[in-house]
Length: 217
Image (cartoon, rainbow, N blue to C red):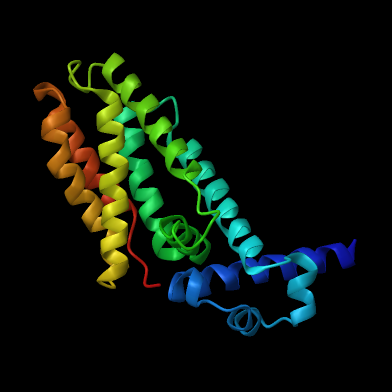
């Protein structure tokens, strides 16, 4: 059992190091040597768990996706209004982007599909589907205008968040990502929410931001 636990610790250390290296350098530039050095393991230990850089990158993407879906399921609590869940989810994901190198590395890999063959669309398709489900609930709860095309809105929200996190990476402003997400909701909510509920959800957006303090990466 102790040997198995050490093997799992080594695998986790390699994944964390790989995610950090992929985030900093991108898939093409990242080398297994950089990952080995960052993880503090031997070449043999790395190849025991992962047969290639591509296989290692795929494992990072899969771990990132599992982590995000766990966060999403927690944020989308059925006892909360669906729109509140969407706002909380966006801030929880932004905070995770700031604090978790596996999330950052996995996201960068999914954005590099041209060079990373396994940088698949599944994380985004699942995220869009969950957002659409929440939007459908919000319409049923009379919080979002019934005439809205929820499929188009789901794509737009996911695309907006993706653009914000990409811009934060390029401008080296990740610690400000939750502020940017708050601004996103301040712009989107007036177009989405029926007038009697707008003030309430603007307050939800502001209060949710205060619950997620930015941490330096």
